[in-house]
Length: 134
Image (cartoon, rainbow, N blue to C red):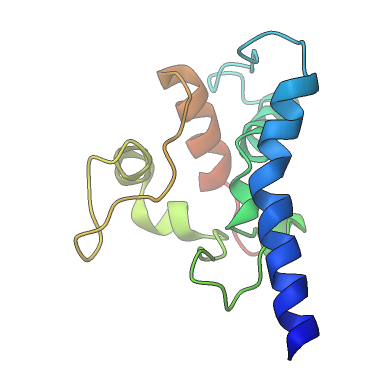
């Protein structure tokens, strides 16, 4: 029991400290350039995935179809759903509004503030929309 609590505390420290550590040692540009969603090539799809990973969406969400596993336990209150097929079901417009905190589910908005411009957000949502079970 004690070891389980220690592991959970260590995981929390790592999750909270990782962005700080990256910020302290990262000297790259403040924003990342991603391909336009109009570019329907594999490169644009890969950029949607890159945005997903760069924004640390995998901390709370998984995409089983793309072999992306959430970093926190499924039982954690911070765990979000697997996103396979979710955007295709809800729609790109609704998902974009959800990520911008313009719509709510049960009175709640998306937990994280997404720091993307409109084009980057469109690229991310377009990629997520294509993530369906095969």
